[in-house]
Length: 166
Image (cartoon, rainbow, N blue to C red; front, side):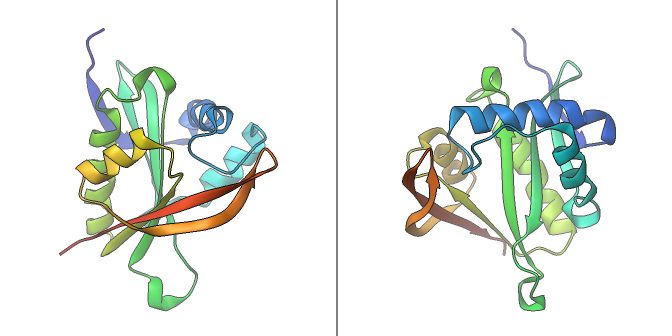
């Protein structure tokens, strides 16, 4: 399969693809503490809160959305206005094939354009594929929050990573 990736800002027409990819992340238990699949109503509400400097970016291969990323408010306090929280999800068949790197690079460009000086993210310590992507892109581990949440009734640790732009 020849990969021809391209990134762009997401539109309402992408909601079903965003939802399907997000639900894969929930099912695979590698990217979120969410346990239950989401529906289109949930995704529509979420999407409507992601515009302007928090717009969602998608990555396509042959006009098929294979991943998405969003910058999210880190805090509602004005002191953190330049800090964004990152969400990134890649379709199962495209993980480890370069889509994440290209998508992350595009999101970082948008972050800088929108006056963010830092991106933070939260990942599971066992998500080695994700951590490889982040480390390769210049993110560093800040620390691990012990028993930060529960997943399937079990406590789960969460690693914090960050990238500060010069």
